[in-house]
Length: 363
Image (cartoon, rainbow, N blue to C red):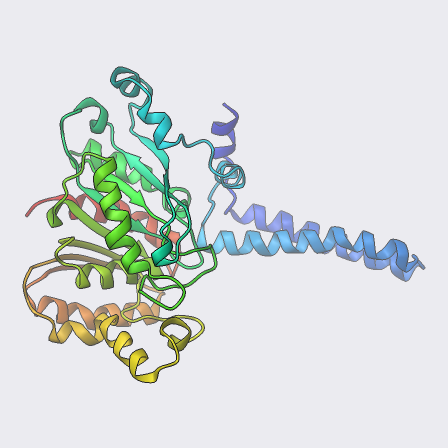
């Protein structure tokens, strides 16, 4: 009941920002006034911590309000607690069939522990998964898998808070297009920016292709074919979906790219990503830039691609508009959608809800 109440408390409303801004300004002004009146430094500095903390909280709330990572107080509490509201996959597996059907009529979001992948530079990670209701009511059926990639900075759970991925998946399942959703960890830590490539620090592409996907096919009743997999993501994850999907058309036939660039954009420069050898950097950049390799890649096999972008996200929109005809030139089915907004979950949340059932339908 408390969780339901907190889920109704909106953190991204204007009132929240106004209250925090007023509290920050008022407390800072009050502390400064006390200092002007002669407060000793030994007492002033500890007292100053209060407005400093409030200012930091206001700044964090501002970032959250813009990107909508944690839309409600319930999301915040869940994230701080390590998302313990989601059961582990092992706990779900220990239940009887009838218990799962009864307990999870809307499907279940669960945490899946993946072992270390040392050759690719990954320790043990946690993937966030969603199993649709039909997974329990039709125990012999197999289901397609949507691999949902997070942005940078970011982590898998972002899609289940700001992106409302479970709600979108439930709506798709109720509409006759059930799917397993898997949000793997595509970086070693929250602030890392590996661009989903095989770089110097970690080999994300190999981790996904050779490590994650085989384990998902072992753990779940999946449709383990290219037509049974969708690569999807937002921002850096959108670039991941487009680049990895096009590079591995043997593994997937559908891509959902939301606000992704068409080439790697590592914040430290491509040498930080691929190494110091300029020839190797140039080669890796070419091989991982859809904007460069799409015009010269083979036509087969065919792909279905959903491109989605906010109308205020000008640079990404320009790149998507440019690459769309190049993709269509190969005979691919390409649908491009724009909607009001910028580079935030205000765009990605409805985009995924619309693109998901489209990506699962066999035309």
